[in-house]
Image 1 (tube, one colour):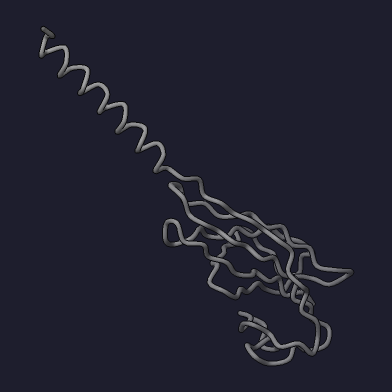
Image 2: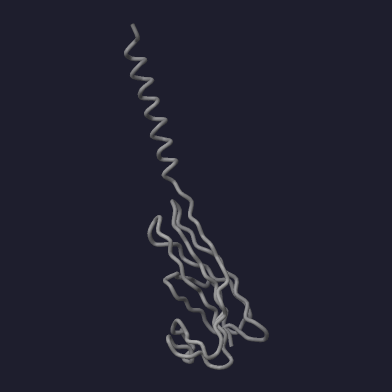
Length: 142
């Protein structure tokens, strides 16, 4: 005859190991991808209102002399929330004037960038766990 105490202890240990395996399997990594987006040129319509640059308005043609350099970011939030760091450099002798986005990806800039040629931008992570969110962050260059 088996000892019931040992049998209960063995069942409890097996259940604890199984529960630990389930919690580890439920953890998922945050996935972020960054791809270049087509640069928007004069004559094309702007996808956003550019803060501080009255010439760039949503749905209106981009004026001569401006370029909107973009990067597409797609984030699927896992257990930890994370965003991407993006590096922007204006083409030729153009300088940064502001930034904008389309598609709901939020961003932040930690340093002064106006009239510089390049800057780093960080994006915010996805709002809901397991849901992919994507958008394009644009540097407005003139």
